Image 1: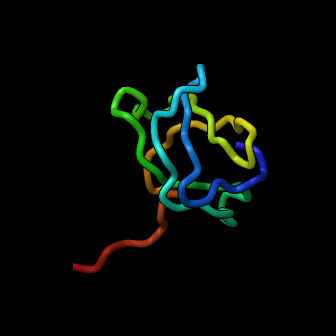
Image 2 (image 1 turned 45 degrees about the vertical axis):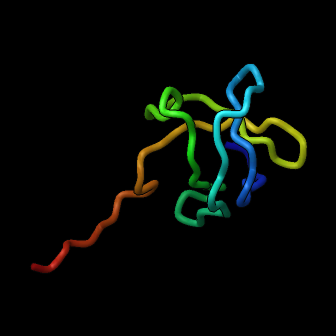
Length: 79
């Protein structure tokens, strides 16, 4: 959440500030009109909807874990 995108190597922390993971890729998602990012977190924090913080430019930015794809596709796969 927020407007500043989290970039590669951004720290992911829990609500107490303990490091629980790292962003591997991030940027602005035009389909969502908001920043999106992918990363790794400890398994205890990997559940859909888990509230986390991203340390962007030294400030904790609230975020939440979401399943992929962020936006459902609207095409059918040919067989």
